[in-house]
Length: 267
Ligand code: SIN
Ligand code: MN
Figure (cartoon, rainbow, N blue to C red):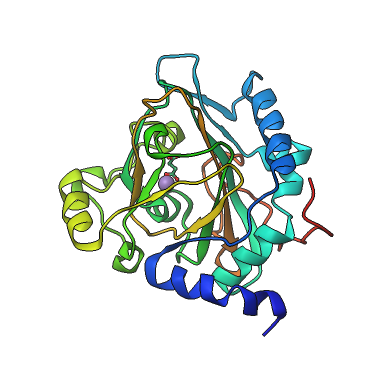
């Protein structure tokens, strides 16, 4: 067992049981500031990767930044993230998806209960959930600014699908809006929450978490004056790459070569 994998064993053990975990090490504040600058600049650009809250000019998310922004491209190669992803997935990984969900003060809308793997299976043809979401808090995140909420242990239940959500619209905008295409019905989530409990993904800017593709999760609207930017890099096992997806490359990376880690953890 390599030194890094050995050091991450307690994190992996927790992740295997609960479907989520916090990484002991955070991203430096210098790195966080560099990322914020990039994301703020991209948010002002007129490009398809920028998604707005429905019917507004409020930026909800930016996608696929690792494909065109140097800082984001470097981020996905940081040893801190690649080693964590490889330890949790247990195989060499590539970047499947990159996004920053920006819950603007008072404006950021909720994400209904869902499992990410439903989208990847039905839309992209991913045959197994051997992938992991690495989540980085770009802003201090607390109960009031719409943190991610996870139901620990639900990743072991497989896909829980509401029958009425099974038809496909073929519209990728329904995978990034508050009106999600595939959801876990509120009544099911309520029942699961009673059985499994609920945890909030909160902490200081720079905190790093991981959560499983099949864990049931959601987040509420931002009712506070504080922005909540959540950066998500999904790493998929190289051996789990789907054939082809009808979705744009900024939602599903086509380059399935294993990530080559950078020399250090500086952006
Ligand atoms: C959120 O940004 O709160 C939701 C993220 C996700 O569902 O992956
Ligand atoms: Mn999700």
